[in-house]
Image 1 (spheres, one colour):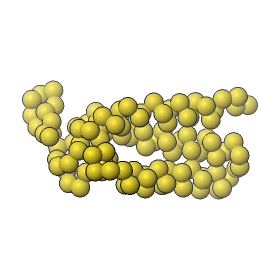
Image 2: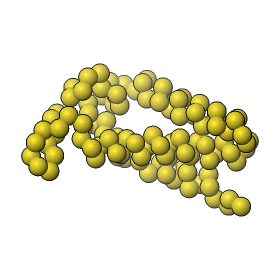
Image 3: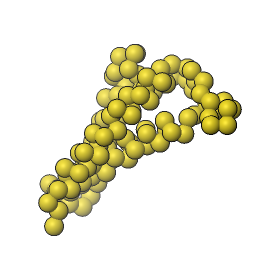
Image 4: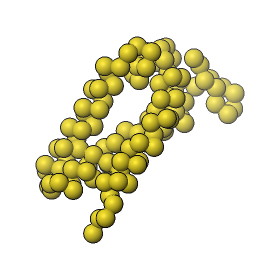
Length: 105
């Protein structure tokens, strides 16, 4: 589904949708790192954060076709539904991050 920007020209990658994806991905990584540092420190915490984000990304590949977050080609697939899903899910990593950072001394 082609999108048009505020100037009325067609754009392949809608910036606002990509920013929502970035918030979810970065928020997930930060929340995983914050959670890992509550239980361990150093390299183990960093590795735990990377593994948590990798597992979540791999889990998205197992979603049914109607919910696929990584359409096979640009401009084809379920981009609108995928970005709507990213938008709905965007508060979750931020809430997770806030919970992981509570009572920090």
